[in-house]
Length: 475
Ligand code: ADP
Image (cartoon, rainbow, N blue to C red):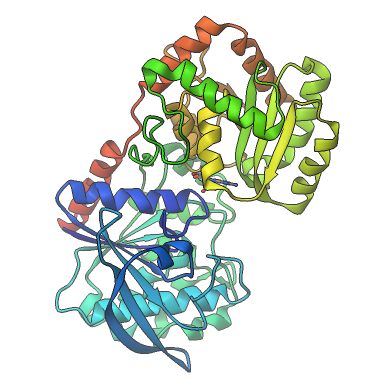
C-alpha cells in the first residue's frame, strides 16, 4: 500500500508536541511492514532544512482565491528518517521559522493543502491512502471529494483523519471558504460548524475514517470535545481509538543521543543517579531528595496552572523533602509565577522556561517522578517516555493516561494516579511520590516493571494497517 501522511509537524524536522513525534515515527514502522509511507509537510526554515540534502522533485503553480502562487516540492535525499520526506515551499507563506502562531495561519495551511493536492494530481499514479493529522490538514478529505480540480481523479482515495487534539479546530470565518479551490456549493454545510468554517469538524465529516490517539480519549470526547460532542456522537460509527506508540530508537536510555550516562534495565539505578546529579548541579538542587518534574506546554489543558500552588502546598504541608524542576513554556501568567518562585527555593526548586529537546531527554533520565496533572490528555507521550526511562509517572486519571498508567497500589501497577485536576489531588500524588521514594526496594521493583513494558509502535501500526485494509475492501 502507498500511504501519504500530510502533517504540519514531523520530528526531527519540526516539532511542537506529540503530533511531531507520532508523524516522525508511524511512517517508519509502516515501511518496516513493507508498505510505502511518505510524509508531506511545509518547508519551514528549521535547522533540519539547512543540515540535510534535498532535491527538487516538483514545481507547480496554483492559486489561493485570486492570489496565484508558485510552489516547490523537495525531497530529502538520503532517506534519513526511514521514510520518504517531502517538504512543500510556498514563498511568503511557509518560509518561516515557527510552525504556528502567525496571523495568517489559515491562509498558510489552506495554501499548503492546495499545493499538496495540486502536486498529487500531477502524479501518474494514485496513492492508496491519504492520512491527515489534526485541523491543519483536515480540509483535504473535503477538497478531494468536492473541489472540481481534484475530485475526478483523486476523489476515490481513502482518507483517514487522526485527531491528536480536539481542542484546536482551526475555526475561522465562513468568508475564508473562498480560499478553497472552486467547490460544489451544495456542500457548504460540510464546511460549517456553529456558524464558522471549522476544518476539524469538516475533516470528521468527510474523512472515510477518524481515529483518536487513545480509546479512552474517544469516549471522553463524546462528553467533552470543545463543541464537537454531538458531531462525534453522530459520526461514531467511523471513529476508533488507536493508542500512540513511542519510537524505541529515539527514546532508548541505552543509546539516547542527548546524554552520555546511558543505562539499561540492569543498570537503571546507577544510570539514573548520574543524570540526576548532572541535573542537580545544573539547576542547584539536592540530589538526595526525590526529583519531581514536569515537561510540557504550560497551558490549562495540561493542568499547568495548578503546578505553582501544588508545589507551594507540598513544601508547606509535606515539608521540604523533595526537589521540583519544571521545563515548559506557555501561558505568561504561569511562566511568570514559576519564575518568581525561584526566589523561594532552598536548593529544591528550579524552572527552565522554553523548549529544549536535549534537556527533556536528560530530565526523563535523571528524574524520579514526572507530573502530568492534565485536564485533557488525548494520549500523552511523556508518561510513555518516562516509563521507558524508569521514571514514575504521577498522572491524572484521564484519556491516554488512563489507558497506559496503572497505579502501583493496583495489581501489576507501576505509576501514581489521581482522579481530579485539583491542587489537592496533585499534592496528594506528590506526597505518595515522596513516600515511595523512601522505600528503595519498592521503587526498584517498580522501575523494573516500568522498563519491561512495551509501548513501541508494533501494535498501533498493525491497527492502522487493518483500518486501511478495511477501507480499501469497502468494509
Ligand atoms: P502535546 O499535547 O503537547 O502534544 P504530548 O505528551 O503528546 O503532548 O507530547 C509532548 C512532547 O513534547 C513530548 O515529546 C515532550 O517531551 C515534548 N515537550 C513538550 N514541551 C517541551 C519543552 N518545553 N521542551 C522539550 N520538549 C518538550
